[in-house]
Image 1: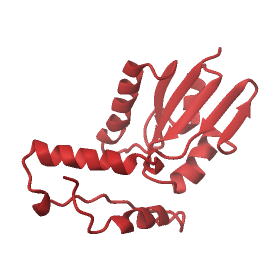
Image 2: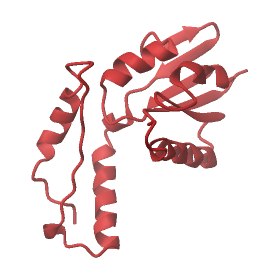
Image 3: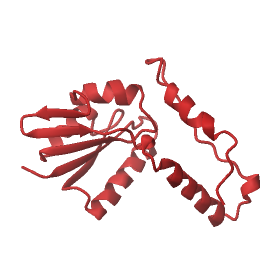
Image 4: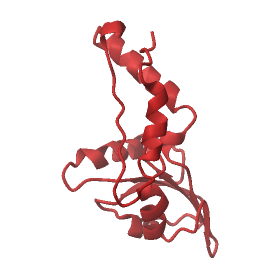
Length: 164
């Protein structure tokens, strides 16, 4: 088969189904938009698993998008190992599997966050000078560098004023 498959890869949770629900809502929205021939999701802690999702799509061109805030242990180590990926581009016969940067690294993310904050402030009639928002990142002891993106990405935002 030809065509393009889009796979959103999330962490998932064995505690809260809402973690995967966020990713599945993106899948539903992207399907309605018709951005690819096939669109699905996979997870580390839920089904479908990272290790099995590529068997569920038929397209020759597969784009895997990690729905994570930054590169870290799961996007650098776990996801590629579980999916058998060699790097940003993996070839398997006629199939080409593209592993993109995380959604959190997209250059427009700051403007998207600003717009969502502005919408929330307006919707609830909040006073910008009396409102704070926190974006929280974390790492894992499994990889000593996993906290670096959260520290680097959040530090410059400290004290930033809400957009008006």
